[in-house]
Length: 214
Image (tube, rainbow, N blue to C red; front, side):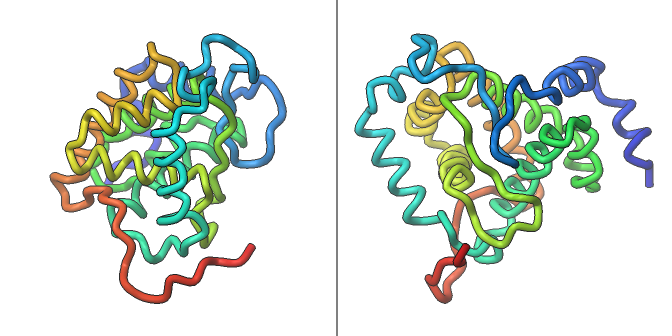
């Protein structure tokens, strides 16, 4: 099996350069939060965030009720996969290491190597053009955070091939210019995962509905 360094060397040079650039935060935030560049009153912020759109609020409440504080172990395998990948990326940014390299180590399956570029790309867009800090847990954190719950709901809409609903949610998270490329990257990533039986459908396993206490 090729080691992570040789596999990383095979990636397009842009991914490695952008990873190095993105790995340096511009200001301090709580640990494991995606940092964005926009202040509270910046007119470039997503319209639905500035105007407190009702549909976005409903999506956020639904995501929180379904996933937030639930055990990660109750998620379907595809959703667990994308959750771990997002956590690995965010933690790499926090530690100022190369996010694609961290993803290479976390995703050893050769058939999923093409996925890394799209995961990195969509998270860079969320990181640089998002509406505000979005907390993520450490890779082994047992519970789903509120930010993770919203992203898992978005992945589920992408996996269910609901472009209008997923686009509306994406537009609530990032600026208009970033919405289309972020959606396209997530669609490609979901297709790659579906091809190997890891569609991130957001399904919670039957069992106790008790939430993980903090």
